Each structure stands twice: as C-alpha cells, then as structure tokens.
Image 1 (cartoon, helix red, strand yellow):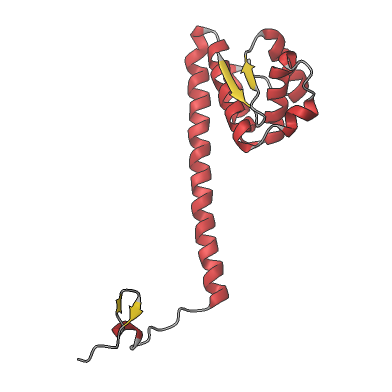
Image 2 (cartoon, helix red, strand yellow; image 1 turned 180 degrees about the vertical axis):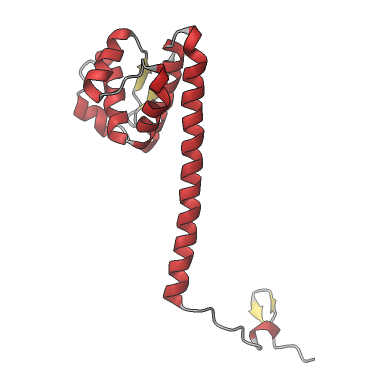
Length: 164
C-alpha cells in the first residue's frame, strides 16, 4: 500500500482501482491506465504541479471525509507533492497487470531518472550563468597585492611581513 503525509500530518493512502482511474481521467485529463503512454504521462506529472495535484486529489478524494479540496491544497507543498507523486508511482506499478508491470516500472523509473538529470543540468547551467553575471557585475578580479602575500597570521592576528 502506498501512502504519503501532507504538511498537517494527515496520512493519505494512494490506492488505484478502475473507478479512481476514471475519476483521474475526468478531473485531471491523465490516463494512468494507458501503459504504452505512461512515460509521457509521468513526465507531465513530474513537470506540471497543477496536473499532479489534480491527479492526487482525484485519488484521495473518496477518503477525504470532511477535508475539503481547499484544505487539502493548503496542506500540500513541494515535499508533500513529491511524496504524493512517488506514492502514486508505486500505486500505478502495483495496479498494473503483471504482464505489463515491467513496462510501467521502466517508464516511471526512466522518466524519473531523466528528470533528475535534467534538473542537475539546469542547476549546473544556472551556476555557470550566475558566475558569469557576477563576474560581469564585479569586473575583472583585482591583482594580488605583493604585501598581502607576505602577511601571515598567528592566532588570528596579523604578523609583520617577513623579510627576505
């Protein structure tokens, strides 16, 4: 059984059945039952928070009781959404017929790995861009002072320059 907790500490169980799949398709325009398109669908869930939230709400809504959609959204953040999507992935794999389960597993894990690589590349590119902008803003580095290279420290105090 797959589950996740929201920011208010409520545990949400992610269980799929055919009725829930229809509710997801209707509410979020996501077809988790189409294994042959699961890689594309999973990429959308990872990259589109609104679609991921709508999909998860369609899954947990039957067990929400007196928790409204607005209350549930207030208890969702990046960490809880990530946990919810992860639980959904487990539920999709467990729900998929055994004959096609390997396809579902490969699609979900492959897209998640590719998405992680894309995020790492974006972070690296951003670091390079930030360094370039900083260098342009500050200008070229200042030359080292010959005096500063001769100064050593002892116990946090500056010592006199050494004579050569």
